[in-house]
Length: 240
Figure 1 (cartoon, rainbow, N blue to C red):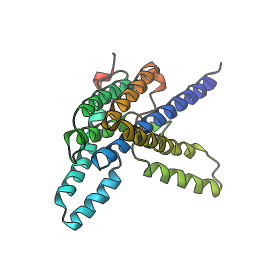
Figure 2: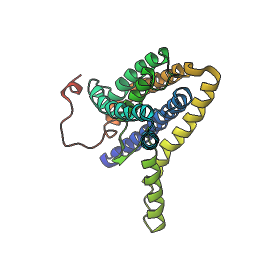
Figure 3: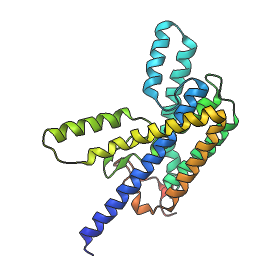
Figure 4: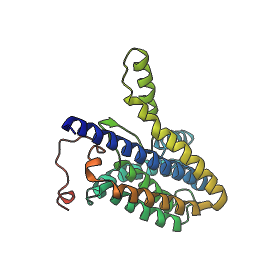
């Protein structure tokens, strides 16, 4: 087998595995967002919606609601940063990070979440921020996990470029996280109606399952899932 063919096969496998992970993690995000919205009354991964609602609350003078929603945005940002840090602790960065998220979701399942602005709510928001550090790019293409507005925008622009003569098809993958989010939200909603907050245990279990799958994926097939960076990789991720 030629070197070029070998590279193409590795690229195809890496892209396929990346799409499976994106679909699975987006489903987890959709399930969690539906559970959080139904149980706590606010989004746990849709920060565009929380930002708009926070602005409306400020306009109406509802300072308590505004404070909860702005705090949620802050926890989401912190979760994204923490996800990058935590991923650097593990040689199997995806599996390790998802394992930590699963543990935190189990803790959230134990705490009461029905009250607006509860510790469990903010803990789940933190988790949703963290999982964005798992898959950031697929073969150099940016991909969203817990937010689909950007993905839909890139999908739409891809259609526009195709209509104007650009015959590349890499933009098609941008619809994957949207599909995952929709399917996950449907499942999360049904679970919440049936078992309430206990649905978070199902989400935690699903996260563990995805973590186990990621653990079995060779590192060479995960190297292009991170955003390009000119800085060196964390020292803790080397030589383990």
